[in-house]
Length: 280
Picture 1 (cartoon, rainbow, N blue to C red):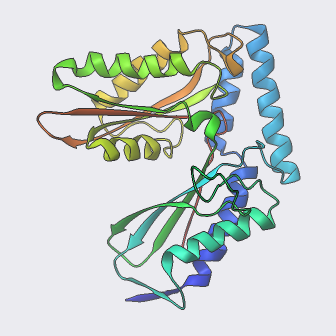
Picture 2 (tube, rainbow, N blue to C red):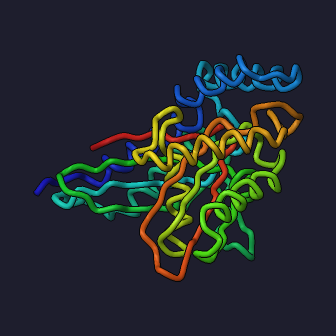
Picture 3 (cartoon, rainbow, N blue to C red):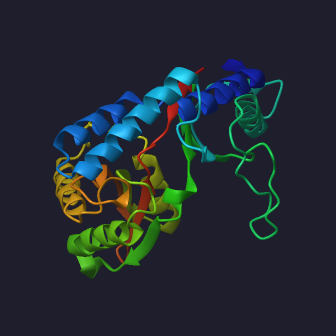
């Protein structure tokens, strides 16, 4: 067994909250640069240039890439040989979010109650997804999620008879309905299978995959490619002002499901697809 002090978790989460909000990943920057090279619309090209410039300034000045610094979504791979010492696991994460957001002067967007709407002031609590794995490590991924894009996400319980064509239709329809609202060019996370909540979790987890990294399943590589073409053919374009680049990538994850079901979830991310990871 390996002991990890709760304060180590708090320190790591605080650091990841800040870097995720100020330092856009190389995969997203490369995808934006590639989109700039291929975009046909002059207005769309100008939008992409400004997005790239904004991200560079944010990294250089350690300033937020976007004013919506998001809800802190935290994914944890929890090694089964790990024991947390001198504190509570979940509270250590929440405290890390509090320190990261207040110490980094990042916007607090969380309200304590969804109906009463009183701001918590420090962007807590986080949403925590934990997976128990073998080993004696903790891998933590902080993925701040802005709600301009989160609000455009959808889930539908399709019937098996609707099949792959029904899945594709729902995904493209979701992006079309979203239009300019999620600040395109977007990354589209798709979860297919499992139960209602599993499909939604898969869709969000799909956004963590680095852009440009191929899917592990050949049939999904083909599906992602087809969907990306269809979505970009919608003509929504950068920031919804028209053009060829509506989406930077489509990432699909699947899970076994019930014989009577075909759950599909679409979780849209704006061009600021943020996530940073660290391991203890």
